[in-house]
Length: 364
Image 1 (cartoon, rainbow, N blue to C red):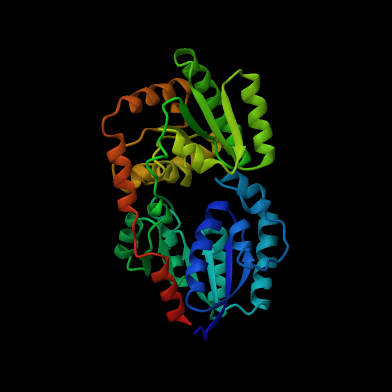
Image 2: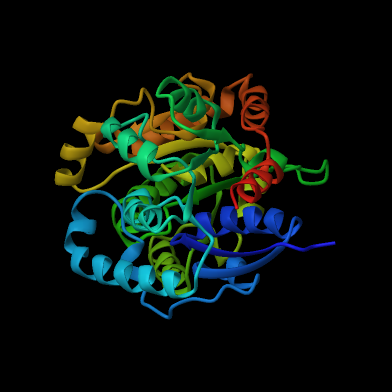
């Protein structure tokens, strides 16, 4: 019988964070009654999330330049959100990803004696390692999705739990077999990512179609605006394609190989059985700054997890249509592709969100 009620504040600014937050809150709901307050998307809203009705588009930015451009709006929204959560008398605050935005929230909540959890570790192991001091000071526990993150926290003597990633539970049935003619193209969910990656992906599609007439490109769109833009550009280029909303999983299952903008989608592709060609291209100023700060050996999550350059990475000037085509041809001929994909799912099995939920209840 449930006797405990928790008022939970949560901030998940991105759709990937919304899915992770949903999994954690579901596990919490198995242990007690949950009142949910904060920012989320479709999944968290389905659990009864009460939000402060603020504009959140400005929060979904990345890199160095875009956050600076949007800084006044970001700070204004963070203040409104903080006041909303404090007025809601939350018992615990959970920040999902978005580490720079959420760290300010953690600091305020910590000062009010509200327990703090960060779900998805900042990439502190890769760059700006000095952030570990603030993490240690203001966050009760960081729930890590990947084993290499937990090792970093242990070495820094900082509280963390390796909960694992829900993608480890992805099961592909025998009927869901990939078909060689399909190639998934995942340009990203942000406007800036589409700006940099779509032209390159279109050029790659043209090159491949010259030698492989059966090639059919599958492109999941993050929004109706993106779908319309992608459909217009690919139609004008005369490419055989399908583009639709809410179709990423279906498209990845069908595609033995995918071209994916660096991020969580590279891991999702691998776990759905699609070997990713990992691409990253941004503005020259952004790249100039970020490349100097990055300390990680790889940019792609699948390679970081396996601690080896298993899947090709094409970064900035190397991210060209001809290089993508060359990687596609190499992956098509690979004899170890499927074994590497299976290793990834095994490596991201952690303690699980049920253990994470138990830990949260132990704090209150």
